[in-house]
Length: 586
Image 1: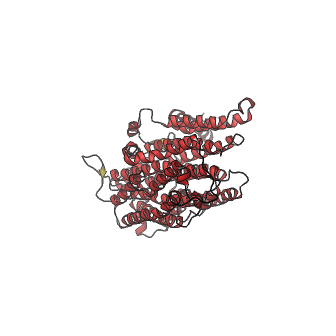
Image 2: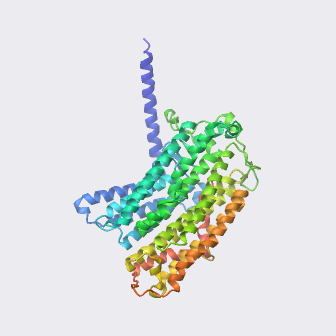
Image 3: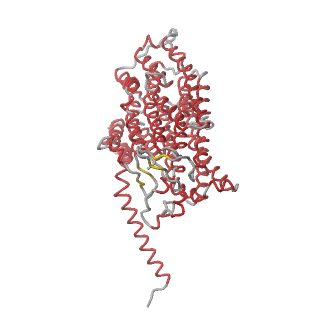
């Protein structure tokens, strides 16, 4: 007797469910977790810190020791075991059934974030921000936010994108108000949380619009659906679905712009930076910015590059095909204009007329305009600031605009020259790497001087050269490097940005190039004002002596000396950023 249809269906579903579970376990244990080691190291450190707080024999261990060991362990596992040259052989792999992606860019960003985390943990100890009583809570928040930033940098799905942004943001809200008994700190945390909640809601609604219209949330699959949708034809037909796509993209961009403190979603940055401690400002201005830029790059490449959408791996199981890359049909392949392969290596097409060119154009126009406005506004608003942290906040906004420019250039040119696009991304990664030393060094000096002088006003820095020549010289070097003056390290990334814009060409990006050059010159004014105050003005009568101590001075030198060395020898780090950019379009 044959089983009834319902029994057959139940049997089939059971088999399919079991195969799905086996496939998920195999994909997670054998493939994904080994490539997720830095994040796992941070998770283990968080668990150890929380357990050490409640278990009596271990609660005497300084939280700093556990945090430093955890950060160093994460840095070690993030280092390439076979040298940086092995990054050239990294092939794009999707992790956790397509939620994340592992490639050379992911490896570079993890290494960047872990190196920053080690420096930040040491800084928080030297300044006394993380005391023994609340040290576990502080470091747990920092480590949790860093995990979120790693997820942002490797996002391959709208859900992981939103999860990464929120994991990075929510601990940051608390960290900005971590200083007890200070009204400005509490106000900063409240403003940051309120603005962040609004930006997250808009971003989530935009993601739902895109996923609903395209029927997928897996970014490469969404790009393939855009190819099948034929955006060019829809534009010619004045189809309203294209307007919905554009609206969803803009709303998704709101969340990214908020994390980047890009105009017009910058309004939280100056108030939060002034109210929060200088150490947290350094954390937000370096690590959070770098992760947001990597995510912006992921979105631009993911939605605008045909090769990514047609060369993704198959899902691990049949039931996992929802929101996963679909098998590419012959019809969709015929829509893709394959670039010609030259004998020299890079692939170059004659013109950017591929199916996703309207998507690239939209992304480039929006990103370029926001970058120009952000860069210009940040520099203009920094002129009249009297508080050093507020001035550096507007400087951070301006540099966010600078760093968005190579993203626009890379997406604009990747349809014509992959090699030129990789050069633009390499310039961005070089900018972020040198920016780590410049901005973290600036905020570290502000934190040390705050503890010594009990002031964060620029006027109180008068005569600092006479009271603490090493610190004054280091801060002057950092400020001039932020301008981009040779022979300091900040010159090379800005030159790379200008070259990327020139290579991309086109009226819009050439205009962006001119604006970037003019802003670079104009920014010299407010940086020079601080340097003049420190080096030439007489100290006020109420000035206090400055004494940093050996360890604090050493920390300042560790961050400022590389700015001089990399200014003369940029090839010490430039090849690494080049390797991280190579193969991103494969």
